Length: 449
Image 1 (tube, rainbow, N blue to C red):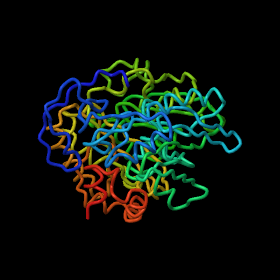
Image 2: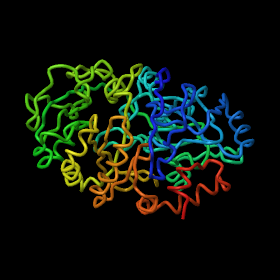
Image 3: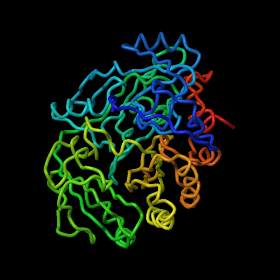
Image 4: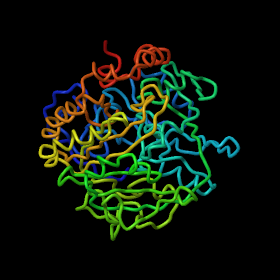
């Protein structure tokens, strides 16, 4: 992903405060953009830090800054008009503690870097996102997730973290020692300070098989959603919302007694794929992780896309909404009714289940959830008109947007969805009383009255 040739920002008129910095600024090839090229950042002033002391010194000198990660957010949650600090050089494994079942890493490390190292030591993480290219600190800060009804999002693996506050002080928080402050800080949206180290829970390494089935009738989802979601360690449903069907079902199964998926000739009306597939049927499966039941290490099966390849479609936009698990089928059918409006602008949708957690600003806070994800064609004027329509249909189910993707839900509604938000604001003001780490996104959606 770091070697992508970023495309230029397209011109768009934007109404929503959530993504107002998507407005065209007269781009040039030298402008700093996110990975998909839809967002041009507000500054190209980027400094790098190689150590904790360098981070502390830099933070103390700046009036405002944001940390620049692997740039996979589609909105302006990580944007800055002042200064960026990159922790990319800080990407080492700091400590491995097999007895405590933890690994501590520098915040600049990506999952793609960490996972092979863990596997070589006989260890594994509980889950991974669709892409291994993302930074660990960025993923946990935005509650990024994988799939599996018993699997919490990636931030639930965090057992401790180190943060540099606005004053340049070092704060260390742990699940065991710090209770509520820890639960508030993990999904911190970049508002508390600079994450410099993260400690993650690990487990013994395991092998997985991945199977793909095609053309599941939507009626099967309606009638057997729970059975489908519980059939494997990780389950993803891909659809273009047409023809009353799920085009592809991806099932990721641990090769262990009692957990292995039984690859039957039919799966709720769907048939086994005869070759590796990409979620977007027109695209080559070369970028995708191995399928057809071929066993392999957990980190080469849990993501949908392989490290070293362009993830997903590349030139795209993304939105995603979390709904309580109990409303999953109703929410899916609500979106399906919009099929003729949605499909012309869509590349693919993905439906996944995620376990509940106790992290204050996680969309899965104290509720098992199902996400409906949209990978859109990169046509912001069309997508910007569609999002409010989709969100209106999902509003009765208290749909919460992914923090790092495109949405138009109002700040007032967004704030009303998180009962721990007042506590989060107090916590953030303890670490950053003058708003050094705030930006337009945070000021609008979190800190405005």
